[in-house]
Length: 63
Image (cartoon, rainbow, N blue to C red; front, side, top):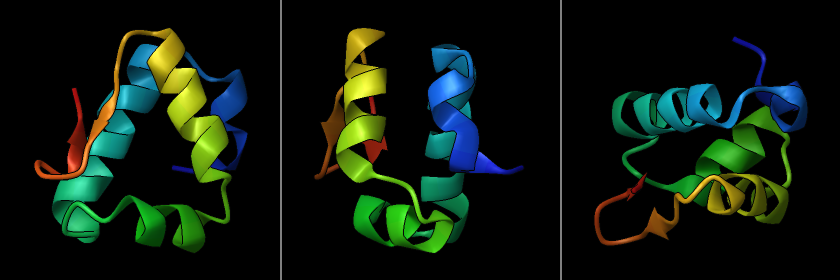
């Protein structure tokens, strides 16, 4: 899945995809995920925050 267009995607879909990738591929490291997919971490967090999800570093996922 191409996450470069996450800003145009449904936030629930982004939430699910990002948490799955964080769990399966990036050991909960949001910086590594953002770098790998060349996406703006702040923009990603802002999009998910508007949908009611915040990144929990200790858990390595959005909740």
